[in-house]
Image (cartoon, rainbow, N blue to C red; front, side):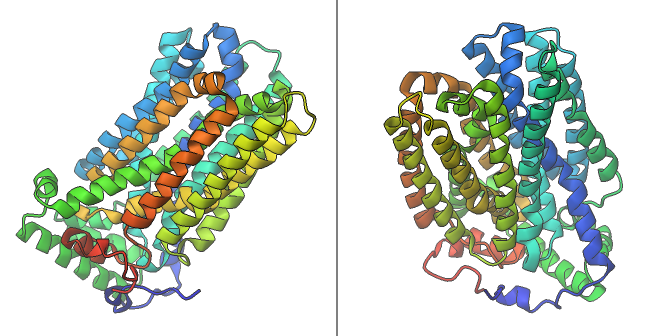
Length: 483
């Protein structure tokens, strides 16, 4: 499929190969250690929660608090992280999150009981939430419009890679050291390694050029752009960023006041909240946190479920690779619609299979495993990557950190509520009821996406800022990427 861009973007000098393209690739790899930590820290509980519950004598509610405390803290971290990155810069914010990841891991591994364990989960949650907002924005602000989707989407691929790594390490550690007390502590300890790599790597990475322009550091912004673009392209892009930033300041389109006095900016914040909550209401993270529990419910033994759970991680990564391939080829709105259609279909099939195949049937665990993996694959191929890319693109520069922070705050809050109540929900209404519930929500989410979400693919961040602020972005009948 051809790759159209906005008329203003197409007037820029073309992208050219060279050391600057490799430099951008290196920056994306280092920053994506934040996504890797996000994935590992959320995925590791999938195998660690069972032995942890037994050793510490936790009931289902206490276990839910341990698991969901990270996610509730991530909601706060998302909200604060966006504002910290607006004030301190994207790079320094990511360095702060690396420290929180490391310290939180130490609290988890050496926790003597429930209180210290929850404290560690909260520290890691703040880092996870902050990284989930700032890393995509950092990558989107460094990437050229022609490849912004695939560059920004690498963070989501890193997230699912981290989750797969957690599933694999859990299976290995659980198999080799399963008889040892505290085996879950070994599982958690692995998180310290990428935290160190993120901190050391980001010390040598540049600041976002768009943030530098917003703060008046134009010479530094140009110097950064010249490391990731040809000189001609860097100068042209800087001029465009400066023009839009100057217009925003002249028209007093900055800060919270600008949002509250512009109905279109209020609307894009509300739509962003809806997109972030839609992603979570598919139930994807219930599978990522409690996949072993779901598979035990399906009929697997605990050990077999721990190993079978790896299949979800493998297909999540495969789906992430497919999503990256399509991110700059298929419109975001179309990607959302395909993803919600597929995940809702999987929900219906999982609920129906759980109802029709009786407990004890030899087919039940394998059919449900296949359908759960199909759901995860659909989610990663069409929704997860696209959602994080879209959220990093859609908000104007002067409110980007705040906008994505507010949206992701509500996404993480929904994630946390599901993490807290999912074990009780399954116990109360069964797998059939839970997945039928997800299916009903999926239909509503599909209608929302089709009627409310603006297109962002192939449009420069500066053109998007103008369209979102003026309301032109909400003319959903037009082709979003034709400026």
